[in-house]
Image (cartoon, rainbow over all chains, first blue to last red; front, side, top):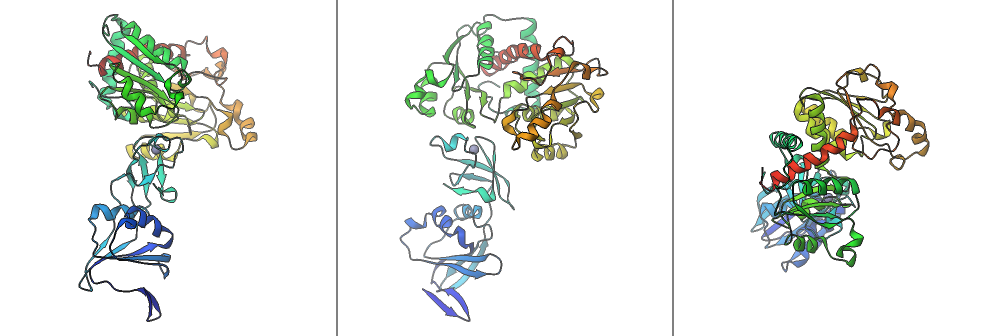
Length: 154
Length: 302
Ligand SMILES: [Zn+2]
């Protein structure tokens, strides 16, 4: 579904739905898993390793007939803090959104402390976000910090 | 504070610290051998810590309560693969209060959320050991007559030492001036210095144990362990620099006291023990009164 147009690679347009742009290419599969896109039966188009001035290589996801509530979509801010959303109705962008790191993260990230109880017993992880620009998560259980570069998705 | 678990030192407010300390003083002056008459306290030690366990059990027994539990996980169903979840759920049926120690971090918080029975954290890995901090506060209060405006020297492993981190968090509410004495590799982590900066509290960092020691109200010693050093040569070079000797205490303030969470290895020379400024053994005794105060207040009996 990739077309060459104006010397730029673009993913084809959709009639109604959501376009998630400016995903770092290496975070694409994490975004897919955070949003459980593998369980959606709507039409989805991916493009990855597209050139981006800001991100080097970026990825883009186009979802037909799919819309997210802010609380859901903000979860991807952990791995794609610069992601931008375009809400499409009738082939045109009706709303643009940026993602925002939530104050609390439940059940998405792993605690980087190997001695944390959450890595040793079946427990839903829980973090408070102590810094949003450079994401820093404080584990509710072991109280240790997991920083941006060590964030792993459950 | 009734039914309020004590997992982390930051779970309690300054007023709650002070309430515990005054209650501990009450228990020290006037023992109450029947306060816990019909109460059962479970001490669940998933790793051995004999001194901490005996201190808790002594606290309960001296108040007339009863104790059940285990002293390390090899003698419990945990070795048969039972999850912590199941252990806590089951033990909750048998007792009024759980005291637990576990090698994994965050375990006490998790346990406290599984049960309506209050939980006291007696150490979760390198994370928290709040009753140690409260007994440190009690020892400071008793020896100085106040907690306000004191000068505290923290010596040794300030990077990994959970007792100094918790003590810093607690004492930072009393306008304390801190002096951090450690080798470069074991300096106080930035997050704690940042916290003090935010509160506008003064601190200095130094490598020399005796510098400015004349201004100290409290010298809080900790162990410097070999395995904390990435470079064994660096350990050999610095290990003797953090041993407190009696002659170093010349010229220190009359009210100054030396504290240590114990057990010590060699960081306080035996010649300090006879000095009236050595307080670490009394500090350990204070643990019993403080734990009585915590237990009584969590059970709503005081
Ligand atoms: Zn953790």
